[in-house]
Each structure stands twice: as structure tokens, then as C-alpha cells.
Length: 145
View 1 (tube, rainbow, N blue to C red):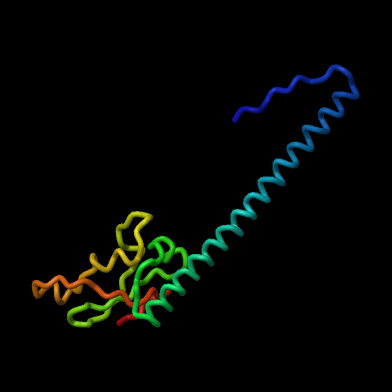
View 2 (view 1 turned 180 degrees about the horizontal axis):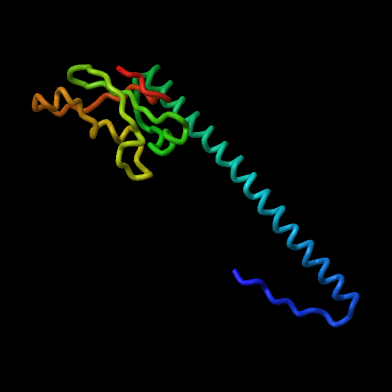
């Protein structure tokens, strides 16, 4: 951005005062930029914590009640909340597996519970069946089932 052209006052005292105000303004710009970056970092940390708590709450509801799986966190919220893995089970053969949410192509508004109908057991798929997956929980790391 081009610098702003200020009209310099004619008298010496006014020029000094004007230069002092310009200097103060430039210093405040730097301070505001630092505070803005600090508040943004704090805000991002709070959002990450909120996403983590949403995932923990959904996991507790899935464990205690077995569902309902709606409402669930968004996939992006789960990834941001350090829960990038989804543990699922086949509703037909009960085989469990983990799904990497970060690797799935998705729209930013896709909820975790929307994946149940799209995730299919590979063994049953090979047998010509397409049962929907049962969602179990979000996990921070792969469980190696």
C-alpha cells in the first residue's frame, strides 16, 4: 500500500508536533498488529479446545447410549480437535477398522455422522453386500485393529 501524503505544517512548532504524532501512530500500528496476532493465537487455541470437547462429548454419548450419532462434530472440527481417526464397525460382519478423516474428501460442513452410509466394509463389499457402517468413536490415533 502506498504511503499516505500528509501536508506538513508551516511553523516549526507544528512540524515537531506533527512529526511526533506520526511517530506515535507508527508505533501504535506495530503494537496493534502484535496484539491482533496474540489474540488470534488465543482464539485459535480456544477453538481447538472447543472442538476437542465436542469430540469428547460425542464419544461419551456414543459409549453411554450407543447413539444417537446426531448431532456430531464436523469432520474439520474433529481433525482440529486432535481426533483425526474414526473407529467404525461393519453392521453385518462386525469387523472393526479405523478411518483417517483427514484423507477423506469432504466438504467443510460434513458432519461425522454423515459418513455412516458412505463407509463400507471391504470384506462385505467383496461379497457383493454394502451394509452401512456403525460409528463407534473418534480417536486421537489409529487403533490398529
